[in-house]
Length: 449
Ligand code: HEM
Image (cartoon, rainbow, N blue to C red; front, side, top):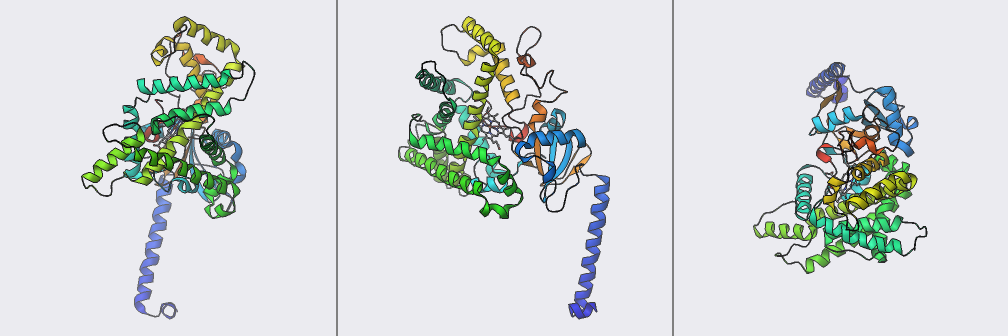
C-alpha cells in the first residue's frame, strides 16, 4: 500500500529512513529533557497558554507572585509563546552576570521590529548591535557623559527648568511636560549639539509621541500583538505607535540633514557628527558593508532619545513626589546642601560630600522601579540555570521588581528608606541588588548620565 502511495520502492525506503530518524529524534529529546528538566510553571491551556493566570496590566507584580509558587526560574506561556522568567537578585545575577553571554541577546518582539527593523542599538543583535553600542559608549564618553561636559549641559538645562518653574510664583502646577523637555534637551545636546525651546511645537510633539509610545508598549493589546503578531492590523494601539514612530523618525532625520549640511570633519560637535565623520572615513578607505549606514544612524539616535528621555524624566518626577511625601527627608537634604554647597552651584564633585543625598537618589531609583521587567532578552545558546534546561533562542524576562524588592537583600524592601544605602557612620554604600539599570551584556547604556 505504501508503494501505491509513494509510487516507487525508493520512496518507500526513503520514507523508512525518515521515520527512523524522526523516532530517534523523539527518543533523544525525551531522554535529554528527562536528564535536563525544563523550568516548572503553571499548566498552560491550548491556544491561550497562561494568559488567564497573569495580570497583563501589572505583569511584573503578577510574575513576582508566581515566582513564590514556582521558584525563581519558571516558565509561562503567553498564548503559544513560551517565556522563561527569572526572579530574585541571586537568580538574576547568576543569569545576567555569571552567564552574561548566554543570556545576552535582545528579544526583538514584533513591535520592536516595527520600530527598528533590527537596526540601531536598543532593538538589534549581533555584530551591528556590538559596533553601534561600542560606538555610542565611546563617543558619549568623549563628550563627557557622566563627567565634566555633560555636567555643563545639565547645569545649563536646569537653569531653564528653574526659570520655567519660577513662572508660577510658588503656585502649584503640572511639572510633567517641563521635566520631560529638560531630560530630552540634555540628550538632544549630546546627539545634535542643540537644545529646543520648551514652547517649540515640533519638540513638544516629539517628546509627547515618544512618551505615548512607551506607555502603549506596556499596554495589554501590544503585549498580545507580540505573542500573536497576525492580530497586528486589527489593533488601534499598534497603528498609533507606528504613526508615532514614523513621525518621530522624520523629525530626527530632518535634524540629521541639517547637521550633514554644516558638517566640518575637523570639528565634531555631537554624536551625529561623530557617526558621519566615521562613515566618511570608512568610505574614503573604500571599506564596504560597514555598519555605519543611514539606518543605523537614524535608529540609534531615535533609540537613545526614546530610551533616555522618559526614563530620566519619570525618575525625576518620582524623586519630587517622594520629597513631597516625606518632608523630613526633604529638609535633611536641604540642610546638608546648604552646609556643603551653600549658595554655589551644586556639582558632581560635591557628591562625595553628600552621602545622604546620594542615598536618597539611589533609594528613589530602587523604590520607583521604573523599568520593572527591563527589556526582554533571549538565550544565545542552550543553557542550564539552577539545574533547568533552557533552549537556545528562548525569551527570558528578568523581573527587576523582584530584585529591587527582594526580601533577602533589603532590610525594609517595601518602605522608602535611604538607610539602605548608608552604613552605621552615615557613609554611602553601594548595594549589589541595586539593579534599576539591569545588568550584564545589555546593561543600560545611559547609566553614567
Ligand atoms: C533613570 C534612567 C534610566 C533607567 C532606569 C534605565 C533603565 C534601562 C533598562 C532597565 C534597560 C534594559 C536593560 C536590559 O535589557 O537588560 C535599559 C536599556 C537601555 N538604555 Fe536605559 N535607563 C535609563 C536612562 C537611559 C539614558 C539617559 C539613556 C541614553 C542616553 C539610556 C539608553 C539605553 C539604551 C541605549 C539601552 C539599550 C542597551 C542595549 O540593548 O545594548 N538609558 N535602560
